[in-house]
Image (cartoon, rainbow, N blue to C red):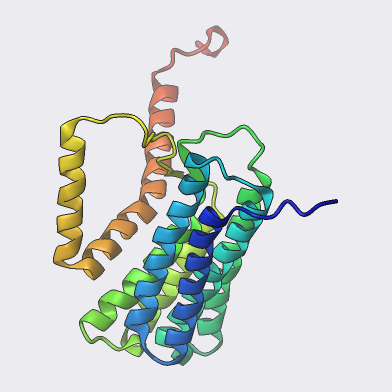
Length: 249
């Protein structure tokens, strides 16, 4: 059978994301944690672009999907786990590497579950479990903020362990997280949407570490807030339903 080749454009973005994840690992091993954190955010941006570019240019392929998944495991699974371990978790002994492994395993399971559900009918508006790029952004944002303020990782090792465990377990949960996949970039939007985007960029530029970390903390908690809201709504609806005839005394 003749080799069909691969599409260049979307896989360039995927390769860039893979390189950024590898670069984050190298910088963490060299103790340059700020560079490692920034590299993970760059990988997240490139990962968000490769799929959209493939869909817009109609260059989706099975190879691209597999390559993207393997790249995600490096950039959003192995790299954040190693970064947080090198930065803060070494001093915790076994608990430190267990927390880092829980995160890494959570990312692997999250990606495997996502790949097996691609052909299944699901609500495209929501992800099942915290997406691995967002989980990685929690780790990277925390490390970036700490280095920005000169806080040593060993001083925040318990908080670092909690964040690693929270992110890892959230990825394998059944909680709903907004995906934004219904947003159509080809459609026109009101003027205020463009203005809002400009304001968001201005806000991020004022203090990138704090704004990005706070934003992804809010996103990470949004799934739990949604679960509580749905549970409360279900309980209120059950309480307001009239009793069945057989239940009347």
